[in-house]
Length: 202
Image (cartoon, rainbow, N blue to C red; front, top):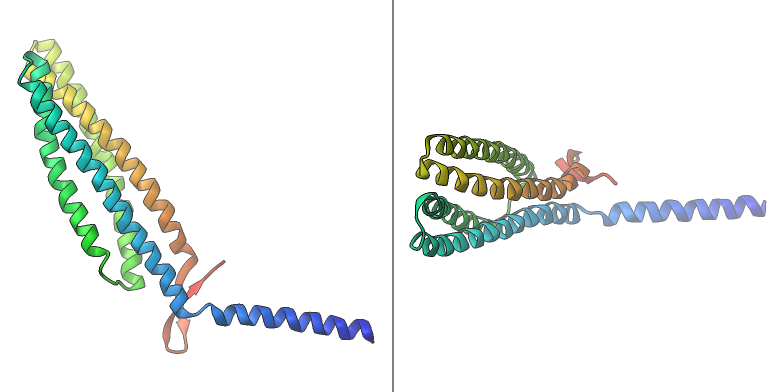
C-alpha cells in the first residue's frame, strides 16, 4: 500500500509540473519567440549591409586613387571597381536603412513566415547571379587577352573579383538566415479556442 501511495504522489507531482510548464508557455511568450526571429533577421541584414558598404567604400577610395596613377588593363580594372561599388554602396545604404526601419515595426506570424521564405529565396537567387558575374568576368578577361583589348581584360578581372566577393557574402548570408529561420519550424499556428494559436514544438 505504501509503495502505491508514493508512486501516486510522484506521478501526480510529475503531472503537475508538466501542466504548469504548459500553462507558463503562454501565447505571449510564443509571440516573443516569433519576434526574436524577426529582430534577428533584420539585425543580420543590417550587419551584412554594413559589410557590403564598407567593402564598397574601400574599393571606391582605393581604386579611384589607383586608377589615376596606372594605365592599360590595370587602370580599367580599378575604374570598373569604382563603377561597380558605387552601385554596391547604394544597395548597402538602402538595405541598411530599410532594416533599421523594419526593427521598429511589428509583424504577424504569417508575415514572419513569408518574409523568411522570401529572404532565403532572394539570397539563393543572388548566389546564382554572382556565379553568372564570375562567369561573365572570366569570359571578358579571356576575350580581352585574345584580342589584346585592355579595357575588356581589365573589366573582366574586376567583375571576377567583385562577383567572387558577392558570392561569398551571399552564401554566408543565406546560411545565417537559414539557421535563424530553423526556429520557425518549431513554431506553428494551430487551431485554438479563439481561432489560431501559436504552438512551440520542442
